[in-house]
Length: 216
Image 1 (cartoon, rainbow, N blue to C red):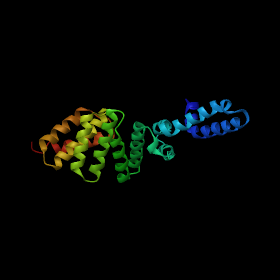
Image 2: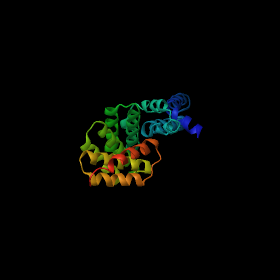
Image 3: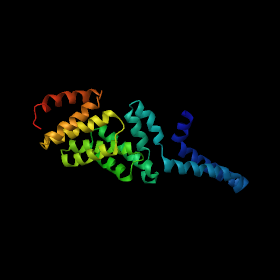
Image 4: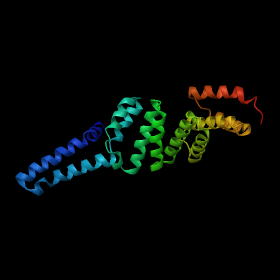
């Protein structure tokens, strides 16, 4: 696995080396003697620009090394050459990293690009829509936030923590709209997911103190 990651990391360098080696061999021994080196060089160059180095990000993300993940993303100079589903993941990851830095405008811009390209999995699309909803709520655009989160719930979310977060955000939006019956229903759904994330557990406790006193 490490060797494969090394190949991905230095794929373009290896492509250039193979092509230059092919040119030299072509000069001294003819085209067919150099053909194999040309083929390998072109293949490596093609995969570098078409698939990119996104596989390398996984290790950084798992260890929480956001700086390392960002360096890999920044090494992609021509994202428009990436295969469409991979380009979608690229922009989604850019958006996620921007969110970590609390650059919400940049995060929204990149995540919208990822959604417009189409996510490779419905669950991934749901997660991106949820994040877009949270971003809209941060910017106090509750109408847009509600639209995104409803879409996220409809598309499906990959874990109970995300589902609970979506229902809690919808509960908050409904309270702001004074639609208390709907707010209570979304709160019931959020609580039923039994999230374990400390932030969500605390939010449920805080909302529970308030929501029992509202009409509806």
